[in-house]
Image (cartoon, rainbow, N blue to C red; front, side, top):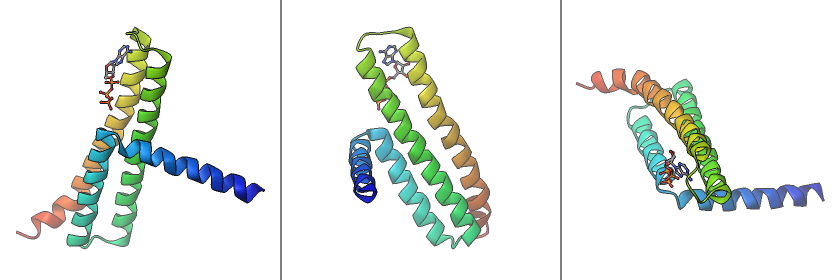
Length: 119
Ligand SMILES: Nc1ncnc2c1ncn2[C@@H]1O[C@H](COP(=O)(O)OP(=O)(O)OP(=O)(O)O)[C@@H](O)[C@H]1O
């Protein structure tokens, strides 16, 4: 019974992933993740570096998913312009911006020395 419930929740989560992939921002993040993974293979990064990079990618995709979810909820709650809805959406977008900036910095720290050493 418990296993069936878990499987059903998993199916809903997969449906959520489909909704997410319909969003342009999420597609951009996914494409960026693929480029970062390919760069990691090319530059032969270490196991620790892979762990950090994969954690960054997971964090961005998870925060983007929550941001998209908040946007949808806001659109349902208020179709009309409302200052507070604007604030909520801006805050959710800020969360994505924060993790993205951190990921770029982490990417620079890991990849830049390896790229420079190729020249
Ligand atoms: N109902 C609203 N009331 C007030 N401000 C809003 C409202 N809807 C959107 N905004 C403002 O417009 C910005 C962009 O909102 P929007 O819903 O278009 O998000 P988005 O980041 O462009 O996402 P997407 O392109 O994925 O739909 C929000 O961050 C907010 O400042």
